[in-house]
Amino acid sequence: MPEAPLDDNDIILEVTAGVGGQEAMLFTKEIFEMYEKYALFMNWQVELYEHSTTELGGLRRASAGISGLGVYRFLKFEGGVHRVQRVPKTEKSGRVHTSTMTVAIMPQPKEIDIVIKPKDIEMDFSKSSGKGGQSVNTTDSCVRLVHKPTGIVAECQTERSQLQNRERAMKMLKARIYNKELEEQVANEWSTRRLQVGSRQRSEKIRTYNYPQDRVTDHRIGGNQSNLREFISGGQSLHCLIKCLLKESWKESLLEMVEYSNDT
Amino acid sequence: MRSPVNIVSSILTKWTRIFSHNQVPEPSTSAGYLVAHVLGKKTIATVSKQARLSSKQLLHVQQLCLQRLQRRPVQYIVGEWDFCDLTLKMKPPVLIPRPETEELVHLVLADLNDRCPSSALIMDVGCGSGAICLWLLKNRPDDRSIAVDISTEACQLTRDNAESTDLLRRLAVHRCDVTTESASTLKWPQSFDVVVSNPPYITPAEMADLDPELTWYEDERALLGGGPDGMDIIKEVVRFSQQTLKRGGSLWLEVGLAHPPLLRQFVMQHCTGLNFIAAHPDFTGRYCILNSL
Image (cartoon, rainbow over the protein chains, first blue to last red):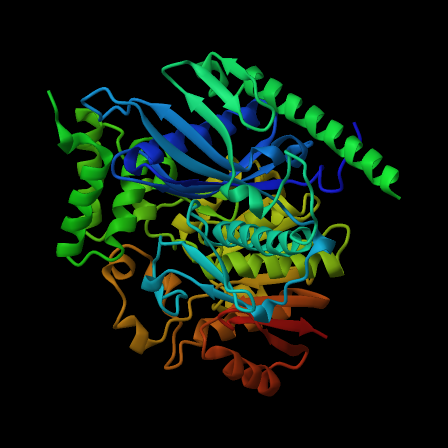
């Protein structure tokens, strides 16, 4: 299978709870864990950048850097809206609810892909330590970066070391800036492919997880997978679907090439 | 039976409130670290707020939080902390590494990689917990280092940390007061490529304003710079490095914000053989490089 240019890039995975309140946040946590396990399954490295949990055990949003062989290639079609249909734990009447969450897959830029001037970045540390230095003991190592020209923000407080938080925030910031540039480029391209990447996918419903019927449906290639629990454990089952998606995408791009050459 | 008091979110809320009420700085961050520690994690980021603590764990949290109420620094309560990607033991009264020093070691590393591509000899003056020399040794596998500190506890902690990070083979630690006559007449070979130091630099005025976390638990000798401008120890370190630096070697210092121009003047007037290169521009402007001519 031919490789697309970004296929061997590392990525940043971002999950955000969508419609459905607490149930959506629980679902977001489950999907994030699914990808964490998939990363393990694929022998990739995961670095946590953001993890915003709620009082009731759900996940509002999270970001992680995933690095390894072929990360972008395998995860690029996971971006979009994932939908769950089930009876929430808190639901007393046994009614099935539909909740959503969004997955964003952003390739991390290589050194040459992106140039950021240090003076364009505003860095904020914890409010409590003021000027810092020897005269203060601080354990609040949160770092917040703002890219002034674009207004893009990245924040990290998952590590005890301020420098490590800064390095992770910088990776997130670079990926977000890079992806904004990429999406601006792609926005002008027109394609009828079902399998696409980019900001358009952010609002596209790509997959439904239906618990009562024990099935996962990917809306781009159709067909159902059963054994939802196995699927959501991020192992072989998810891997099979991803391979199907890659094969479909390859077929689509071949078709497009053929149509294009027929037209010219 | 429902028992909401033993879930993480309730425990965090409770202790944040108690710390806040008792003017403990960084109340919610402190509570987060202590609960995470009881649950075997470094930070609260990945701990589920719905997780339940056993009665044994609840008691452990209480014990740690009572220590925090007595203004004991979190790093001492937990007994360890991260310096960049190194985890080091922390023990009172040895100074807890500050975040600014994480930046310093990166600058020194770049300098070493530039000037000494193969191997170098590094002197760490006032090594404390060993953060500086150990991080440099870890990132430069062929280097060796000598670390000195006035405090026996600091020397022991540096050795312990060197052992747990498997770097003791390339490090020698000596208890030594660089301000005494004997230090400068000791036969230190003038063979160090780099002398790096984060000396005490706090002024008398600042000392009066320090939080109990520092005055009650950290070694005053690691904080008080000496003299009205807090420069006394800094000047001694500069003098000491004149005996120990190789020709062309560098002295790297982390000092107070007001110190770089004062240091520049001192070097120009009193230190033949040393050249004040720059106060390295960075987000706090407190790093100085001096070059041995």
